[in-house]
Length: 202
Image 1 (cartoon, rainbow, N blue to C red):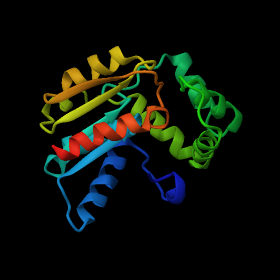
Image 2 (cartoon, one colour):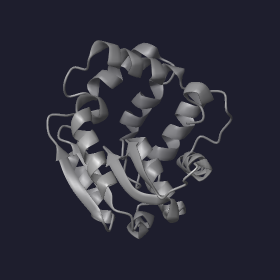
Image 3 (tube, rainbow, N blue to C red):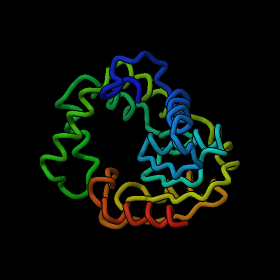
Image 4 (cartoon, rainbow, N blue to C red):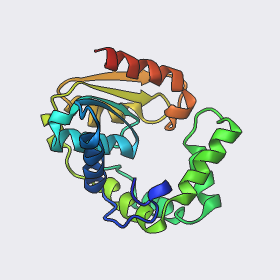
């Protein structure tokens, strides 16, 4: 995403809408521009839903892992203030990321995650945080016709994922992923890969 990784110095806006537009441009440049299976984790899942709303012809199916609801993250003001304070503070960010795991992550993988977070431009991190935290397009997700798999980690408020995401998508299948926290993509990669493969096979 712009503001992160190799695109750290690309200017904003750093919003869910802009990220979805960037993703749309990438898909449209493919030799075979779709429709494609879009896989998103956390805020990335919100971006995937925004793409499915804005460019439905490009989206064959969605795989949404621990998705931030299109109605916003729902943090308390205290929680939001705490998360804003982790931006630019490697140690604070590290402690927060560690709390999002149910099982202790493999050390090398966790270091890569922390380094990736640290490389995000602070302006991008803060602006995107406000965008996905205060999103308000839940009703629009009811128009998504593409099949969707909502993967909810057992130890990461699965009831919320079912009620605020899966229940709104007309063609959603809800999957409770046992023994996993928010970073299920790192804790249960094989299980998620199987769900993606199932979607691809149709």
